[in-house]
Image (cartoon, rainbow, N blue to C red):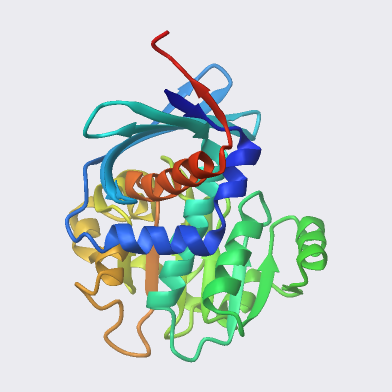
Length: 310
């Protein structure tokens, strides 16, 4: 039987602290599983396909996820398979899984890569993922001051008022220069964050560049930073690294956030290091969130059991 979960049921099962713990536990297995990602377009729809195998939640799993956008609205589904039996255990909403595991990634990046004297954080972007990124910052840096900046000033004012945040009244350059952590989560296709505005010690988490042509950071910033990725090949194709010369892009990567969390490498060599964490989203992240949602919903009797073979 396959457990089919609605968006509401999936969201009810995925509180951020638990997803952070599940992802960190998944990453404690040093050797990652296979992961494949593709961007596709057909008609009016844009899609990202992610597939991969991973150990999580006490088992071995295979996940296939289609993140689909139609006229800007997210949809799609996650298919969660038991990797030992090939059984399709669950079908669930992709938007909730993606949003929550991306926030969990940010929470771990802040926890393991932020400067010790973290006082101020900046969220660049006011879209659908902004509230989840805010939750990640509040989880991993509960005492820091958080400000939001958006290209749409009115949207940024509304977001700041709604979530009790500071509002970056000046330019983005000034807001970046005053921040210890900068989380970029926009669909930009031209650089927003400039190298000359970043102060020593800053952590920059770049989430918006997840498809060819997307870009939030000046290439010069990446060239001067310690670069940590979720998956090096994906970031070279879809992330900020796509905008750096191919001959040196791979050499800039210190390692993966997975390796940092597992203690294999150190994120920093000193307090003045500028860290860029480039993320495009991996199957391991999706597995961690999807397994948690499946196991919790089954235990609570949520969702509908369907016999797809019947």
